[in-house]
Length: 408
Image (cartoon, rainbow, N blue to C red; front, side, top):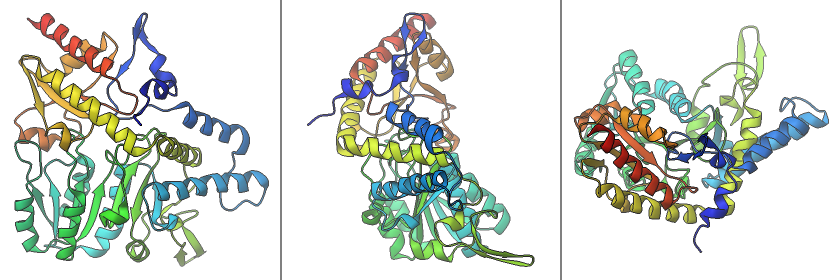
């Protein structure tokens, strides 16, 4: 059964908003952040109205309710990605912090001068800068799997890079610019054959695809709530239990300790070992509600709907003279259409589209090296989700024709 997008859209109050009088919002920027259904908004509102208290240490009713909601959300998030145990799901602020947790804790405990880390040319800055910082500090070496002209990773080059015996392979599951869905299971399998640990940036994949961390074999997997119908300010890091157990704490303070003395401390058990201080409790509740919402609809339905919208969008955009699309064909990508319009800067495209309430992103999308690879400073990017419609794609196409008319 197909996803009923008309019914789905009723769950998102912001989609009824007018950007200006008489101009309805057409939201095509879900890769940056998704909109939130009323079910998530209500769950967070109910928490603050009925159960707000700090977690874990209190024995009163509100504290116990709050703790149960916080940890219950963790259980459901773990199930959503098929983690073996909820203890392997660490709450963080976002995907960026999850990657940094691995870089600061696992990498600084395990990597030394000359050790190789393999990344890709399509990485978000969040999966580049932490490794640049470690390179400056430790003298590790970095190498990059090239991106082909059609927006795919060159796995033959990757296989040759593996001959250098990397210690870590860290890559995005789905590109936030090209939309490319990378063959994560194969990349991980090949890395494990040479003894490398793997870290996957799942910020763009978990919201849109069925992700099974056990089937993938990922050692670490990072993702954010705000891109999957949940609130901002919270994300998660999945890790294999033996790795997480062996890692030193990332931050020090309340709740990550078992015992503190004046001259020593003992860290807490997983997952609390990596969750110092009062956490984002209401946001965790919202995260759990978002997982419930997506699960109730079905990730397969969501993926099929997005594929249909993306295929239609690429066909319509290709009709426009002067439009150049980036990334592979619709069967190899998620709901992203990055493009340039001949002789018109992407920022101008986005600003003019906004006059008609059409929200797209313009810039390098925190992927400057990828844009340099293609010899361009920026792109315009339309991105789609479960609430996107073909009618909105038509609005986008009509808006681009209007941009062309203005500049002609």
